[in-house]
Image (cartoon, rainbow, N blue to C red):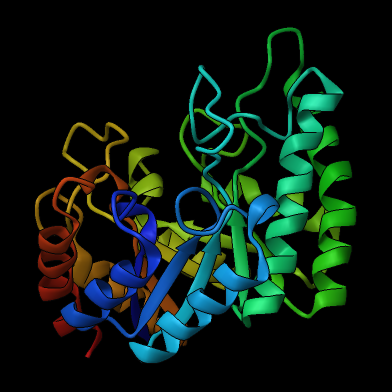
Length: 279
C-alpha cells in the first residue's frame, strides 16, 4: 500500500508549493483537488495543467486520486462541499454538479490519475422520498460511469454522514443498479466510524468494491470533524491490518482539509502515525 495526502488541506498555497510540501514530508502520492485554487476543471487551461504535471514530476509524486467532491468555486451558501448536489430540485442547478463531474473525469484521464471521488448524491431535498432520490442518483450515474469507462478510469462514490449514502453498505445497491465496472467505492474510514460501523468488518465486507481509502481520525463523540490520526479514537493499527488482509495494494489518502492554517504539521503528524503501520 502507498500513502498519499490530499491537497485540500493546502487551499492557502499554490499547487507547485503544495506538491513540494507534501513530498517533503515523505508522501509518495497526492490527491488533487478538482476545485479552486488548484484545479477547477471548468477554467483550467493547458498552461496550468502542464504546470501541475511538472510539479508532480519534479517532486516525484504520483496521483492517488482526483477529489471532485468539493465545489468551493460555486460557493453555495448552504454548504460549500455538498452543493450543488446530484439531487438538486432545480434540474439546471443539478446540471452544474453533473457537468463538473464529467469535466473532472476528463481531467483525471488527461493527468493520468486512476480515478475521481464524488459525493453520494447529497442531502435528500424536502418533498423527495429516499426511493426517489436513489432512482435519480442511479440514472445520473449511468452516463457518468459510461464516460469514465470510455476514458479508462474509475468514478468512485464516497458515503458521508447526512447525505443520501451515509454507510458504506448503502453503496452496494447503487453499485448493483448502475452495473458498471467503472464505478467503485471510496471508503472513508472516518465517515464509517461516524456512522458506528465496525471498521474491520466493513473493510472486509466492502473490499470487492473498494478502490481507494480516505483516512482521518474522529473523536469519541463520532461527530463528523476530521482530525489528525492519533488525535481521535480510531484504532489505525486495526484498520490498516484489516485493509492489508483484503489484499488491497493501492492508495491510502490522508484527508485533513480543516487544517489549512498549518497543513505541514498536520501532514507530518499523520505521516508519523500511519507510515510505520503501512511499512
